[in-house]
Image (cartoon, rainbow, N blue to C red):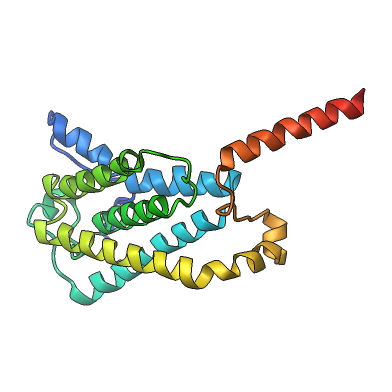
Length: 222
């Protein structure tokens, strides 16, 4: 009985032509969504547990589910290079990488414009340059490496911008009023979930409180 064909875990399985330095660089760029999800949001939840960030992450998850539904419905094939990349068994329209990064970029930009979490930042355009440049590079990398066509990455980008803007509106105009309820809920109290968007400078606030707590402990010890 012949052995069944092997299939790679595509989460971090990115191929490029050996010796192609630009391809090597873009292969790492293509993994930015993984770094944001695992290194960014997961770490943020463990150490910060901010409601705005948690709903940011939830929006990205919903966006990816929508992407899979559309891909399964449209069933548009990837470019011919998919055979070399062993990706022909999955669909290409719209690009999930482009959708993820452009959702992230537009939502992050709207957070910055509204001053949520970054109210003390003066050069907000400079802060927003990073996510948008990474979004464009990710979109380019998916075409350059042969995983998607130009139309597929632009479709993903457009859908990401649309869903990111819509989700931001939902969070800040519908869900936000329930933040205090979530904070005071059993879940919120158990996991120390909080909303600090009403605090102008969170870093200074935490710094001052940490110093005051240390000084208070020192005074009690003496």
